[in-house]
Image: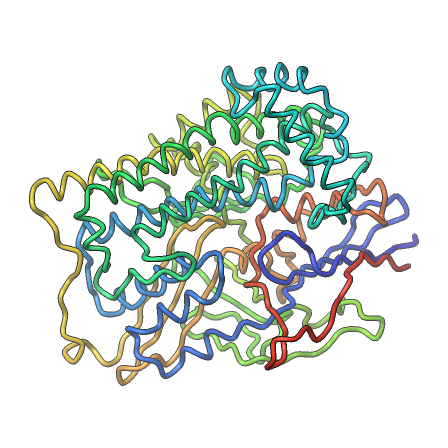
Length: 564
């Protein structure tokens, strides 16, 4: 049987540098896959020898988008090491910023990083705007910015991009691909919301900056609490935050959720085939205490899509190994004991990844030796299975209105549906967190920091900050000796999902989800991108290479390679 290898390097519309290789048989069905992180991060090494109180400001530089969550997990890991409990107000302010980031991240992911895998821009130019208005009303009685005149202006704007040759990031899409399913009118409505989402995500950044000081790379967290005291006590600042969130909620209810229902209907055949379904192992740590003491997310472990047998989450069962990763230390061990000394072994002579041996900068985290998928789909499924009073009503409503079953969320389209539902949950509960903060202030609780004396803290200790963040479970592990960081390790959500194979040959979630995908045209592997993008990959920040005078050194054109 002949086999072709298809290389996509880099996978674009993601955070960081990801290379995907798939092997397809004579029927163009994927039989093997390799996911390779192509950038060495090295932050863990930089943090060694640092004052533990400083690590948050450095660790947040791991990513230029996920800055707040790395900042928070890092600060929390140090607080855990020193047994410092932060005041309730500090926890609420941290939650306000984090939940706003959830909403922003999910909107950006779908519209600006993933929707073009479902939306054919060129088809939108053929849309009848009057028909588009009527079509959108099938998914919401009052669709977002849906007048015929407005859609005409969107269509005209898209047309001007095409005529002027200024398509930018739209220029290299697989337009006209036979697996696109939207009508011209559905494509136009989606592109309308694509453009509106640019403004919405910008406004959410303003809301985040109210309490975070700035974004990205906020400055409001310190070991023991937050520094956003003046903002917390200023009614206008609180009102500004909530005004933006109310506007965002309108977009979610009238644009995002309806658009995802449109995707579910148009791509029902993809869901039916189970495209993008992995091994069915899902991991959640839970968290974010609500005013009524419920948890916004529930923790748990599901294996093999067995929704009737949920185990409790135990962080001590997390291990990492590097048998297929470019590091010196290979054996599985606790993240506390992991080593990140690089050991790069190069590629094959033809430039492809090695079928055996090391092939990624991403390590292989495992839970009791098993591969785990993390992220919105894991959290939303867990919320239904464990009958969360927070999550289950939202999921039940979406499944009733869309016709989806729980197993359907474990697909490429389903991951997007879970992410949209989660955005709605997080946005709605921002109002609960704010109400709790206002209630505390009303009764003169203005505490935002727990006082401690650093010289009196233990000189040898260890701690972890483990949180659900937009893409899944984020864990920061710190070991402290003689008052300095002796070891620091991060297991990010994409470390779980973009994991390479391990010593036993288990594929990572990306790799497993690609097996069995049939490509209609191997030279235009849109089906592969749909699967990978559905996880919302975040490998690292974008890297710019310039000389000391700021001049461009090289210009690269990346294209798909198909080899026999």
